[in-house]
Image 1 (cartoon, rainbow, N blue to C red):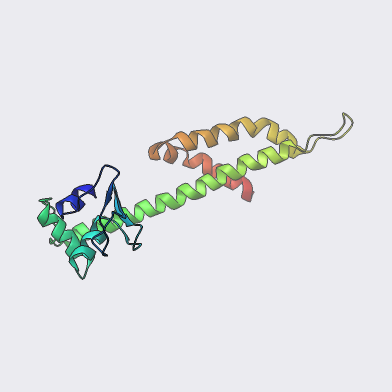
Image 2 (image 1 turned 180 degrees about the horizontal axis):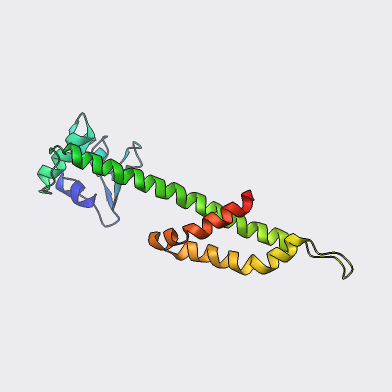
Length: 178
């Protein structure tokens, strides 16, 4: 954003402030951030594309992107059309990404629910030596460390590592249904 603001004539002081090009003022009220623009005087808040679009009165964001591409020699192919195969492949990858992210959320909910349940069941300890232990208490004692380890591994694993945990997550998910 600072490069674009300077390139389009804004003088940015040492504190990142500049005279806002969107209203009349004598002292700087616009803050130039690394990824955006905000004017405390008129309230305009914009990223680089919205800033360029507004500054030049361009009708669409793509027009601003094309202007930036041209003015700053970015050499981006903004006008090219994709083939049917490229679009199909992109959509397939996007669908796979969405499916994985859905599975990842569900897997985390399963593991976290399992861990919380182990904590709850651990609290079902017999109150006296004569009380019959609840089977859920005994199960929790044998599985709490495992549940904690699984959650920690899931949090720290990358995507491939999480995928490798799929069968264990499914087994735990089946445990709840069974």
